[in-house]
Length: 227
Image 1: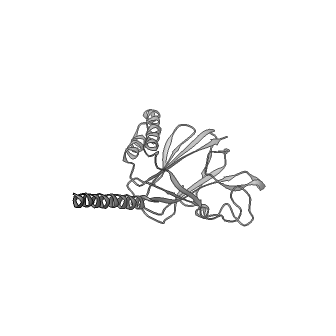
Image 2: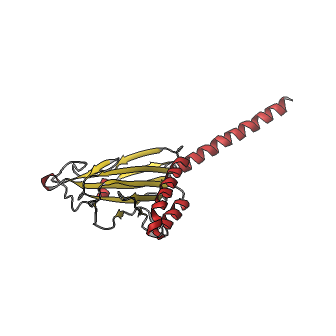
Image 3: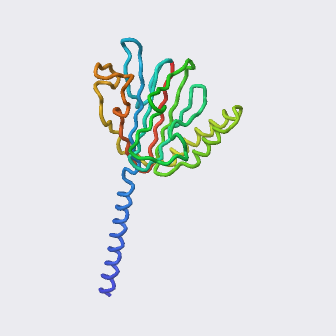
């Protein structure tokens, strides 16, 4: 009986040890599997008070002020930047195309090149939904594609469905938490202040990036109160 007992105990310990080891391996596999660099920068003020500021949370910008974003994938990560304007219109700012091949360690600017978005005279809330997932968000892509191809009179109703889909995705992944949002570098003294060392019309906003690391999923919603 003792031999049987000890054999059974040894087997249970072995199985338990393998389970812990497998769990540890799975945790290791998912650690930081969402990883990308991100910049969201605005040119604010006017005249001698014109300066750069980084945007990481809800903020206020005025008509005529400009902003620009950058995404750089460090690992295979599906990043989506969806914009809802003050006039309740939607557009996908990133990726440029859902069918484009994923490229790592490359700067993708929003808008492309040296251009910046400039806030027009239509005041109100401008909302950016940023989502990053280790899995492709096919349902969201399909809804966004449907919106893009819809007739103008149908788009208003589709907006509400897309916003609900984003909320459902965030709810689905709410158990995952961000590991880190780490500023990579600060060029001169540009985070919200003037600097003679920085030409704000020529700066590469990639130098102001934050590195985002998370397990499986990350999301943030940033609203600009456009005055």
